[in-house]
Length: 289
Image (tube, rainbow, N blue to C red):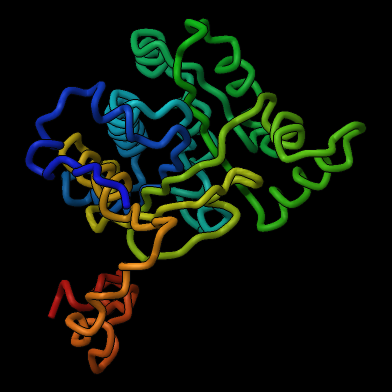
């Protein structure tokens, strides 16, 4: 039995960044949602150009928090097929907003000041973003710099088609070789997903070939509101609370009978049940009742 005693949450929240980075995931998928909801709360019209600029700046600040805590590869989900299927000004301006914001002056200065490598996955299928993808690839960063991967998907089959091409490439006989073919380099499997709203996973959220033992967290604050205390609580759970596996299970089940009320409660507790708020928004059921 492992005799290591993990730190308390209070100690972990105040620990030096290096200590947190030692247990943080190497590869993380960041898929926030509710950005237009958050814009409304901030007094910003969600179909305006101001929304696009404000929202991207919010995302960059959240990414700074992620990389400051030791993550080496962060896949930021910025376009899903449901967005492409929308109508109205938001959809009409969507690709233009991305092309303008991802390589805008403020964003480029922040990439350089933060020393990030930046890549775009999925831009090949979007001609309007090809130039922006090439420009991001040219950013100079140090050899040890973390990598921000903007992840875009326009159709349900887009990533399947890209994966199929990678697997058919000559000489591809392993996962690492397929990953290198698909993304241009080898990337460790993602072991953490931070998303928003309804607990769900799909190919347009988790990039092909990158799902390791994926520990998932869904916040209920809309937009790019990830701050250091929230991320540290998530990393604490990821590193210490969920890490329950042990090779010697001889004493593991001695407390189960004392926990009967938890394992046999009626009605069964179901993580993921929700309720519908006005405006057709889902929210966790027991958080509202």
